Image 1 (cartoon, one colour):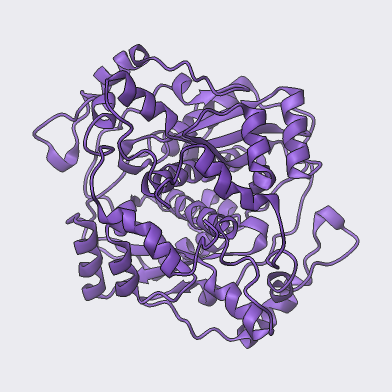
Image 2: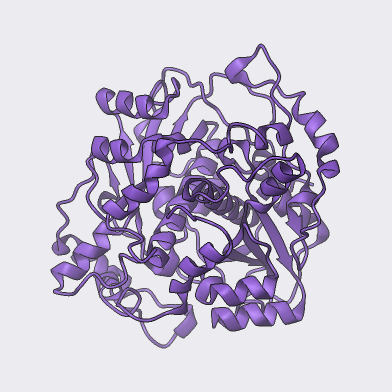
Length: 251
Length: 251
């Protein structure tokens, strides 16, 4: 099925969380940032930015927010930011108002720009023999993160990305059967738990490297469990943080 | 700088909007969907789905919503959907409640899953010699789109992606200078319009293939103009559409 070496890499994509003690070369770093810069962008508004976090204190602070010991350990750490500040400055310095910059619509466009760039950079890194992990956990305490990064209003941290030379070889993590997530002209609402039976068994054969001593729960058990259960979490302060940043004010 | 052929392609990425009258082969189609399936996913919750729209009526309806004549013309059309419905079904069929599925946090995670998959598939397509265009315009009338696609609650259409054999060779569109969008440890708020002077001139040398007779406006003129000016637009009904779909109820 795979049409070329790059696609083969995509089809065997594995998240890497352990890296060798080796920073990206200046050439690798520039290449990855240039790839980010050339990513598709909504309406050509170019509404994202990237921070490359090398400061040990900031890395430690982000690790503490993420509660993941590999965050800011070995590997180069990037924070991808939805950025409406730059375009606000352009408009203001030209004597104009902020226009639609505080709407949910424009924020979502910036969010998309940002996430597209994350995947584009990850693909570039993997094609260069590097590995990486996308970090959603940076927003486990969004207000603290914004303070640590000293971000201006109209910017918002979306995802982290840590890149480096792999120091582990995880198994390929089994994904949902294609027929349960890819449809023809209409979404198939007729989902039945029985459709997951085989898949649930397959998932349990996967060993998570984060705890090599035990197999992971079946997919349906994970969905039915703590990851999605009702609970109080600082992640819900994203709503507050967005408003404080002047974003999605029409929501 | 470019480290390999794939990265070279990323650094010369051009959006393709005109395709030859040739559908994807079954092998190409399966490969692209398999790439989507293997994309990184937040918390392993796999919260997105893809529709492959071949029905001429649906394609025409999406074209009408987008107001772009190339949408649903030649090329294969995909709609990428943030999907919390599947996990809701799993929880409900196991006798559980919906947990955190109606929170903004979980919606944003699903949104990220979805956008990551879009870029991953676009990269795969480009590596296979195909071209593509990411379609934000599908949400120019979000409520109508949801009706056309007959989407269940807890799903939300995020982006379209049209893929095919390129039938045009656009110029490389010049992007913001790297130093204006990539920073070290701290975001540089000291933006000055003068920093854009050279870039603004460069952008005006780009000919947009959608109207080959005239050059495009400078970047700062675009930012300062209609794209971001205050106006009434159905795109702002995304807020309403999200709530109606049972999403971001804590916002």
